[in-house]
Length: 65
Image 1 (cartoon, rainbow, N blue to C red):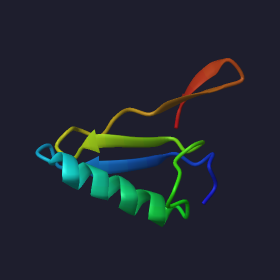
Image 2 (image 1 turned 90 degrees about the horizontal axis):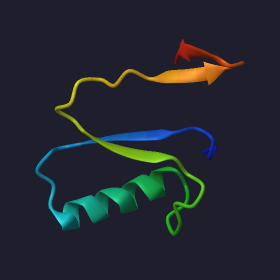
Image 3 (image 1 turned 30 degrees about the horizontal axis):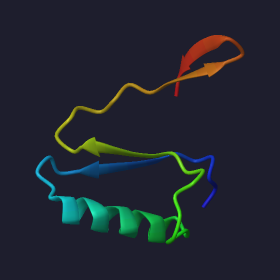
């Protein structure tokens, strides 16, 4: 997987520490780097939250992503 591609992981709001750790292990395996997350943009969001508005800048202008 390309490290430039962000990874968004939706998780339940009531995860235990052990579940969070196992989730991270599974995500790292999925992206093909089981021992390291350096360079990856991995975000964890509550699955109950509404979809975030994603914006990106292009040539000094903000455009929806």
